[in-house]
Image (cartoon, rainbow, N blue to C red; front, side, top):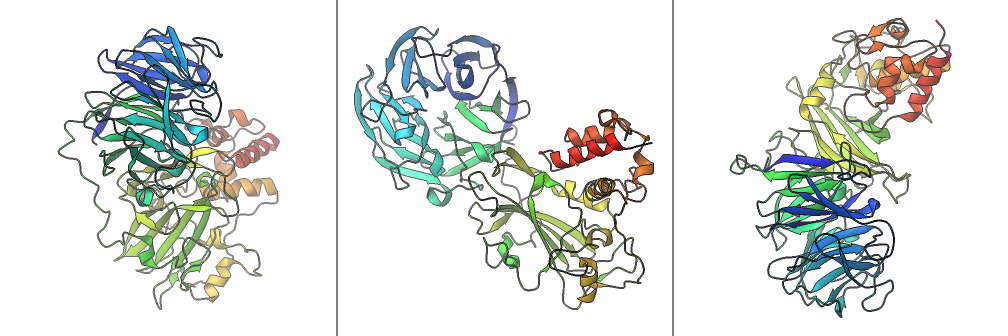
Length: 592
């Protein structure tokens, strides 16, 4: 990796050194100090570059020295500190110890007035630039606070803005503006003349997840190398470009990065609000040993298409309801939880082939068979009826062995690109309910661990999972797949199914069948199969205590695992609250 984590500090709270939404930052290289606006605590905090607290000031209010939603901080060449206050609609000027000096601006839409200002920057002449977020413009002031001029209006054209956020100025006085809701960076002269822009499709105003694309970027900084560093918030990473917008590199960080600042040594300081613990500042130092070794990752397999469209499985993308004519859809009765995502599953069968199910315990899949599973979420501000795809996983049998791969969808849903697969990838998502979480794409190794533990390798495509009716059909999927010739060799007799006279018990057994049995099948772990589930869990000691204590969910280790997010163990960030409630009620009513 080009960067390594050098140090980290903070945490959520109101005490000195902790944060409630760190929002803007500035480095004083001369004194080796970093200033951070602690937004919801209404204060500015100063730290040494090792995280040692040096000082802090500010209380909530509108008077001199008081702050309301401090969003950004910058220093001029004389050491004065400029803090932009979003909800006080002004810039407040302090000395380096927090002593009040003066104000610039007030609420309004006229010249020198602000509507929720966010970013602030100063050029080599100490002229002041303020991002007037709500008025979609940049305003420029003289060093003594007199209004000079402004530029920008609402829109997506060059020089127009849609919710501009933060601003930075390089050593040549070029101005870089994060045009947040247009998912791009725009570059201007100090007179407001447009120079260039970058983002998805050159900065057309749409979001994306690939290199050089942004999804609601936040703060921006210019490093000693004159490269431009951007906190690409919803993509969970920092992106680095040249001053002309050419992509240089990217690196992932924990949570949603909000602030970014770079010191003279090239160390990148990043704050986040949703990482492990949240509200922390991390310092990422240049990995000197890794600079000569760094290169883009190689493809997982040269024979795999780099684009999902090359399989011709979604000929009408982004409409995922249309598959290639050869696609055979299926839906397991007890699906894996996977953060509650919508899933589209189907297989492509080679000509004149079928799955031999004569051994009901281990189905024999023909060479060339491909299984596809697409994960989709309804996003924030979008209809829950039209979920957007984020990832498609492929399982492909070739020459007797299984190949696993993942394809990451572009933001517009037009296609998906092959991931390297050497490491897990997590992608920030805000769903239609406004819940923020990260969709986790497992590495190839993690995929193989789960699939190899299951007889037949393929999860969700088995007798017990297919033995149910889908709406609009009078027979089970299992029966219809036999009739169509997809499955062959069935010897007849009873077909496996999760059953129980008690409906709650049946639902608990079924959920465990879909989420646990791939590993807990009597091989290397205790058997959670539906026929033995009760005898292997009720009053049975597991690694972390009694698995199920009748009448007492809190003392049941299985309940604790599900309620704390410990099961399923991979690829899950959101807890399935509906199932946790079901399991808790079921254990409460359970009798010895």
